[in-house]
Length: 125
Image 1 (cartoon, rainbow, N blue to C red):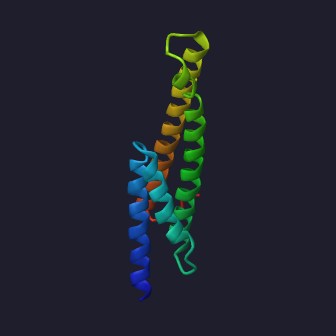
Image 2: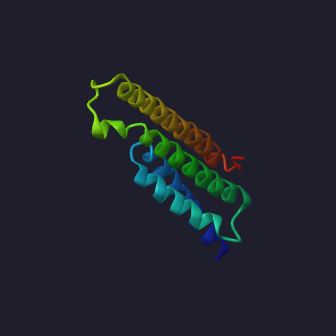
Image 3: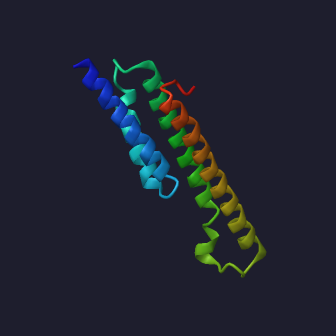
């Protein structure tokens, strides 16, 4: 029974990392990755390294969602004004693109770090 739980936790974490990678393309996948990692993080008898992996995914998905929401705020003027209508609209859009790139690169970096440690079966923190 204990071996089945360990395999189930590894499956959940593998799914979590797959959806964390897919979160580079859509934010909905980040929420699914968080959900899979949460299932492992709330188990009492999980191995320490896989528990640390789950907390790593949960923490970084939350940070990514906050960064993505902050980046999305900079695109609000595009709803009311054209791109070429004013200089401040261009500036807000460029800032939004820069912050979106920062959020995307953050998630890519944390995915690479976490997944490489996951393949070695080590704690990521």
